[in-house]
Length: 299
Image (cartoon, rainbow, N blue to C red; front, side, top):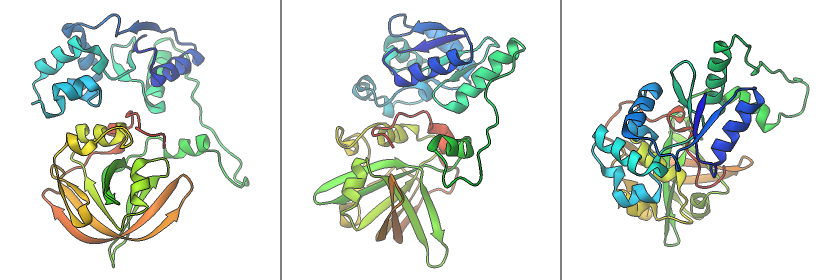
């Protein structure tokens, strides 16, 4: 197996450690020093079954300066940009011996890689079913992760405003919790800049992302409002109480905050919808499409 890595990347280090623990030999290619050619990138994309924009780190400063989030989907142009600026390439990329490739950023991706490599060598993978004592008072986070691993659900962007500040972030812990009257629950990490603004706000907006809006997901998921003005990098207009409304999202609601409840490292905001815009009821961007994003703040 060959791995395209950036030694400064924590995801790369974690992937290498996991593969080493499985006894898998990895040839490391430091692609910032040994930049791939356009032909190599085209081959890797075919093996990944992805397009160049799918492996582009749009929140990198170079991508922002080039305005890549607004580029048309010209495959050759994107590949040329990745070849010229390898810092834009998502990592790690694992080139498997069976001719396929995966982005090795999640445990699920690593399981796929390990299983494929062990199948090639007729060895059994070391990822095993795990059971826990049902009489225990609680599970560790790592144990609970086995239950939710592989599940999929819609992703949303939540925006808000208070005390002259505007904020927004990518959110997965969101759900309708009542049919009549309609109610929605939005959970924000207490480490998040958006939470610090939202805890003083009385209105939130919840935006649905289309399946092709990964660029918005990266902007609101991989950057922090502590460091970046996200709204300077997207199209929006002010809504009720100056809450930013993202104009490119196909669906949104605005809701009044009825209550806030602590659920551990997240706080739930119970919303009473007061406004709605629906321009499309098509498919939405899901967690499994963005689970390799590196959060602007730890969750």
